[in-house]
Length: 528
Image 1: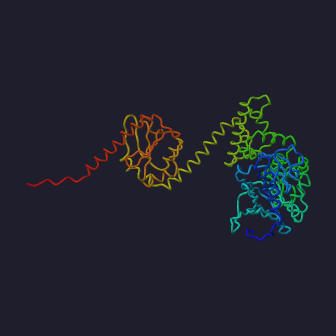
Image 2: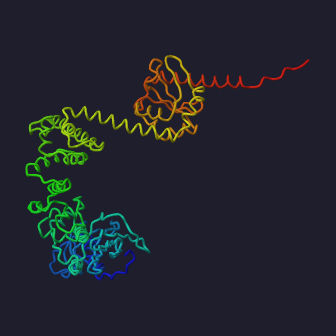
Image 3: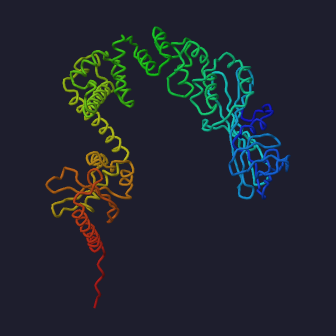
């Protein structure tokens, strides 16, 4: 479809020319009592009398008008509406626009062709018009639209949607009426008018082509639902459904109520949730869920909807009231509203974790704990511990040299002085644990791989009387400190620690020189 030969469009440039209604110019040059005019549209020149004369019979053939910059007028030759521009003080004018031309390919295929049209007017010259087709949108019944951009010699598929404004070529409407898949689709101006100019046309017929039941949806009264389809607002349609309720993903008995509300998006989402959870809620329960949804952040609603699979709306409301996290009255302060919203979020997290860990969700003890916040904290610790244990096992297998190098590195880097000790990591799992406790990135694969391969090493600096409590993490290469950080990437006691590490590196250099002296062979004594 990208390089398909299409019929030429007749009368496009003439139509486009008429659209530049605010860009027709007549250049004038004042010469005493007269004004010489040049129409940039028709190219004709004529003279006006700029100053009225006392003699009524002098220059009777000339119109009397005093041209002024940007003053509206009419060309005396072609009768086109224009504005005056001084001939010697006007720069070139450039205007552009887009024209949408629709063409029928066959009963189940249609194409929108977007032309880029320009108008150029230079000082004292006639207006020049040009048009170039730069975009095509192919529509096929039951399919997503295919978009192509013009790259000069070939058309290439584009993933970019329509982000420009255009006017519609009149013959487009006749072509739409002749196409089978659009023939009976009613035109709803209220849906199209969401867009500037006539831009809603393409979006409207993209939806009509992509969703074969678009015509029926409008005719039965689901205009808001159709509007959401046109505007690409997620409404979760099921294109494979054979019946209307299946396409909407709702229970059959909810269709009438939805039509009465014209396909309202919020109501539709509640009915879709009801069907997804295989439930059938009463009006009271629907009101409860509606209130919950309006008071819940969109990022938390998925967890809340999971909870509704195991808890009836009435029981959930009653429990929330008991725990003082149900929506407060209108007179409540914003602090109270936020506090209750945070409590509901924590409860959704708690239920979600219970589901993910495979607990029995039929037990009231699990669903409605007396202190759900404490239970939630326990679940978080348990889940985090399981993740950390898995991570430790993984890194021990991937980076085994960290453990085998420990003894040798300990001899090289271990030291104690001034109430602090420093030593290398025993294994990869210890580095991961250090990063977890101090909340920094040392437990990442990059540092582990570097230590494992010998490019740099991770050392632990700790207080002498708290040897097992992480304090400072140091990265060293040979005898050069690359970086050091404490908890949350902070540098506690920075002046003291910097001085301590400076002394430490000097001792490492001294230790290295002494080792060389010991291991060097003594020179042979001279014999007499």
